[in-house]
Amino acid sequence: MRNTRPPFKGPRTPDSRNSKSGRPDNRASDRSAGRSDKPRSDRPRTDKPRGDKPYGDKKPYAAKPYGDKSRGDKPRNDKPRSDRPFTPKFRDQKTPGTYKPAPARDAKPPRVKDTTGPRLTGPLLWGFHAVRAAWMNKDRRIVKLIVTDAGLAGFKDALESCTLKRPAPEIVDKMLFDRLLPAGAVHQGVVAMVESLPGRDAHDLIAALGDNEKAVIVILDQVTDPHNVGAIMRSAAAFGAKGIIMQERHTPEFTGVLAKTASGAADVIPVATETNLSRAIEVLQEAGFFVVGLDERGDDIAGLPAHDRVALVLGAEGSGLRPNVANHCDTLVSLPTEGPILSLNVSNAAAVALYAIKSR
Image 1 (tube, rainbow, N blue to C red):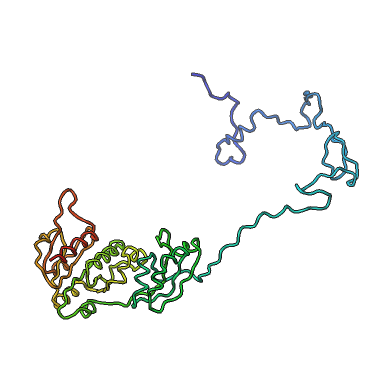
Image 2 (cartoon, rainbow, N blue to C red; image 1 turned 180 degrees about the vertical axis):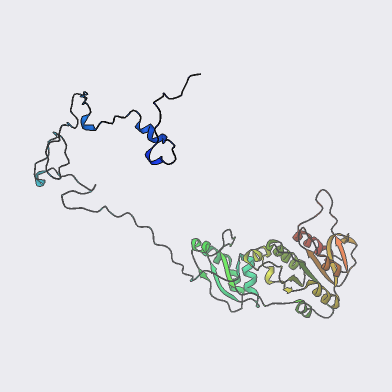
């Protein structure tokens, strides 16, 4: 193994600053090792060659006046500024000291102003069937009717046959018409801004019936999908139901989607809201209604006996009827489904059950 120890440079002498401790200052001894104690003036001069050029000998630049950016022997332009060739600073500059701005680009077409005033707010109905049913409903107040040219032609029969006091239709362009409604709305060129119908409850539905009148009422237990609710309204109106009862808190908002799915049934069949559906069922039972709950655990609906007044209770998809609501029903029935799919959509199940009850 190669010896890497440094060579011996003599004994170390203690530093005067550490005279009390008597310990040598290694750093001081290392700095003093190999140095000459002679002053710099008494040291011998060594003349070593420094190359061909002495230190600092550089070729000076040629003298040039202030502001001249040329360097070295490059000839400078001594011509006066007036005699120099003109170099345009801008692309379309023709003569010195003048600048012709570039021609302006074609301006964008002016933005079409909204001639219908502010954006539509409140309950909106769109589509021929939904707006026509609201137009003919004496209990519905129409605030504004907006149509396109094509929509006015299709809605002309409703305008001529209606005897109620209604606002004059406003015709707008189709591009502006699309901006007034939510994206994806199938409006068919007709939209109506309306006010909500007056509120009803179970007592109002019973009071509207005669003493011995047969009736079917549909009760929705927390069915919140507007498409399903609209389809159930359409089926209930088609099979002659006298009303629909929904829970006040767990019910979809009345929008154009629900009305468009109901295809006008929202203004044909009365809709009541109740805070407690169990209490509403008791009110119907006191009025002579036989309450039937649609549940897959019940008996076949084909064996249901005939009744003059029937209340059909439908639960939400997945969870079905809540236990308290199911316990208040007089009986539970199910649809005779077969095959790998044993359940139907709640709107389809409502249509089948309403047909089975009506055929008794």
